[in-house]
Image 1: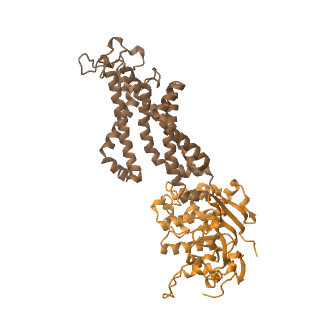
Image 2: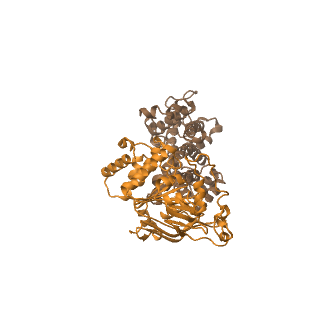
Image 3: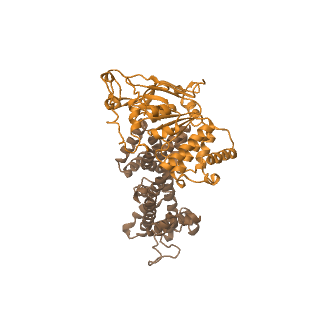
Length: 325
Length: 290
């Protein structure tokens, strides 16, 4: 099997705060192959976005990458200098952000913002760059692309802007796209259009995508594989289908139980009791034990390691669930 | 052009009488400062054109006035109107140049402060705080009396006083801009910090600067006039409006009021016009006041 495009090995990203050391990302390992969409799921504060920024080397102080490797295309990019990293950003790895309202600069036309990426990362001349921008806008479903190049971001609706943002991310032919909650700020109808668009683009260009979201429904629609994060650790990972059908970790199960299902209208939605614990005061043991219905004395003593459960599923749980939903 | 004329900005401007009045005043003064020397018959600083016999002539509508000297003459027979026009050029130059200098320096420091934060930010902003705890007149007066006078020195003194406003304004808007995702997006696209500051942050923090700059020109003209009046401003060879007031002030109690009153009125209306227009810009461009 070919080497994965991106291979995270025991990534540690820590923030030194006044209240103590926050291990926002604590030994996370997963990989992404070319042409694949990997969903990164977890609730707010679970370290999802920090992983995205760690990959790009954009963790702001007081945060820093404290350990582990980020192997992209065979080399560890976490050790690259700022200058080399700037070439990786935008050209090899692009990012789509959550809020399309603020992710475009209001004072420039979108044509100019698209052109900036191309000028930075390609050797194309002005005419060729313009043609490429128009093509890309057409690809993401913006009609009248040529005239829209001279429009300003405020002349677009939210969904249209997110299309532009995606166009910019795809423009330089990046091989990995990190989409950080790309549809959270959009209407549900626009959401599914954008998701379809991203999926199609990934398939057509053969790029890989990391889809960061808190929405398991989005993941089940989009991702080939899922990585579930809790308190900076991977608690479960595997093929999307298996994770959705028979989650092994109680946390994943809890997330799935909190999604309404159209076939099961009688069922009350169950929520996960409690809130995410303070990551600074976790101590030994499983960090989910306080909210877990299946917790045993062992869970407080020893922190569970990520281990194969069945099929493609790996889970970090002493007592993995066996049932199928 | 059609779009500009039908815009909300122009509409609001037309219906704002103080703004129209202010900008007309500013335009009139600008016209006088640029073309004034062509309109008056005398260059008051060319000694060969002076007529000592005509000294202390009152304005034309008073007894003893002469139609050649509309606003009268001073002790050397200089036409007061001509002196004002030549003086206004110097005052306006100092006001605008000092505004430009402090704008550039203050903006750069504000951008650095807001974008990088940390120690750099702390140092720049504490210096600004310390400076703001003194009246700006006092600082300018101190600098001028310590390091001598001249137009260059005035510019330095006014810049030292004026950069703070820009730095604080720019820092504030920078802090709110860099929260937005397009700055993150620019970093993700592989732009360097200097490119991001220049191409993405700067254009987005410029609007408040227009307002600050308008008001600053007015206050710089006033500070310069005060300094010159106190005798630490421009040299006697390049008399600004403030220096004209001072020269006239010496003979004010001999009943010769016109040599100081007219330059004084001129300063008043000039700064009044600038402030009226500045207030209008502030109301228009500041989204919080709408």
